[in-house]
Image (tube, rainbow, N blue to C red; front, side, top):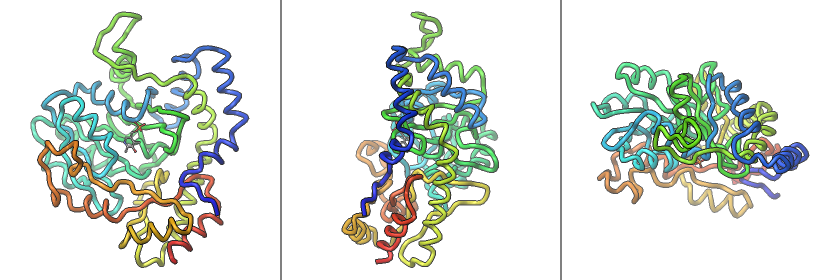
Length: 364
Ligand SMILES: *Cc1c(COP(=O)(O)O)cnc(C)c1O
């Protein structure tokens, strides 16, 4: 049985006519930067999330960078985040000369442990940057409550959770700024790099829009030091087609995730991901915690089931962050989970037969 880890091929086959038509129309129009496809996408992203403003940009990493820039995070500032994430989250903090201050995760959803945030707040703390990992939103109510008491901003790294629900609201619209990624394998992916920022504040939205276009308010009048962080029209056209099918894909992802969990219920050596009360998951990854990961990976790969590890090394143990002087044992939950976590094939196009085969391969 041929099982892709993320089935982009089936997705393209399903929407091929629409995608080809829209891509061709951009080529014919020669409007490659900004333009109507980009505006249309921003409108539908704002409507979907309920955020007043959506600004598309060049990647999820750039979205996070722009969020920090818009909040004037600079050298010497501190930003609280999780060590159990993709490097981009903390990379952009360090890139601006600020200090990533890590707080360990909890074992329920693998997101930042909100009860451990307050003890890390200092007079230098500018923002809290929780990550909604694997497609499930972090404990945003608790995080927002702490942030509002200290008058600091919250940036949701929603690069894996676009489409997820949190107490009746959408991920990306739960804090000062929400950031997502349209990297091809994300729940809403384009055919290259892309991302978006979301917020409800008019002035902040304007600043983000200016920053991502070289700090330019009017042509050749530059108010800020910005970046070239625009999304191109071809990617916007592809995303506009995928947005038409997104609701349906999110429902399928949730069903497939629930079915995995049900099928794995009686497996003693793996722990299925939990979806906490008041939340849904878009399962950017369906990740199980294994007692003996390396052995199980070998077993699955021998059966033809592709697997991946998100993420094998927590950020405080990465060479790039050695200068922070952190060590093994500083964030025990992140360290434990990084040693046991493993992602299974996941996409809205995963069939029941494929899923049954994967689970049978796990059970040996
Ligand atoms: C993918 C991802 C990013 C970066 O997004 P890109 O579009 O690849 O730059 C940042 N944070 C998390 C949690 C991600 O999964």
